[in-house]
Length: 234
Image 1 (cartoon, rainbow, N blue to C red):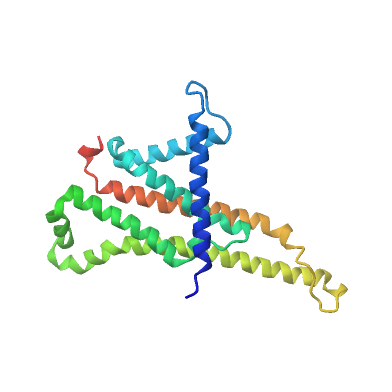
Image 2 (image 1 turned 90 degrees about the vertical axis):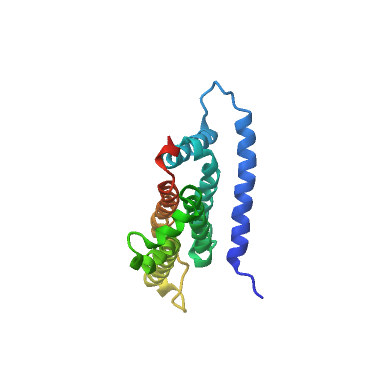
């Protein structure tokens, strides 16, 4: 049985995240609590604070501590997986099995919150709300979130990779058109790619990768927070 190359990329990203967490935590432990954080460590602290504020706004401060670690890891993992193609490695999030698994984890958490705060009876009753004939639609609705989140992330990252491949092919054709006459084969080094591709990489990999991470994580936080009663959020 052949192992997909994405498996090795996933292991690499996991190692990067794990080692980074250890190194950054050691740096934070050595910081002066009365001094303003600077540099990379300060940026990390600001990022963590931003994620904490977003989670607490949706789940309440009492429950934020339970969800923030997962959301932070989700943020980091998806963003790294989205932009790793900048280094010539195929993005794992261009694989539907990866995005589907991430969406399943979110879906399981949503169902858990619904059962915890609505009770088993309330959870089962939600399938026939507002009337019993809505049962098929409500069943589909329960799973639609999982499907839509996985397909949205998968589709956007895959399309970005395809677009960049087309750009490189076009750059090769342009290079051949401009200087192909100097070789017998008519093919030359793709010298146009370093000129035209970086700006497009900034959009399709960095900007689009960030936006897709933001959308996936925000939906995760909002959907979990929607099933937490307001009195518990206070």
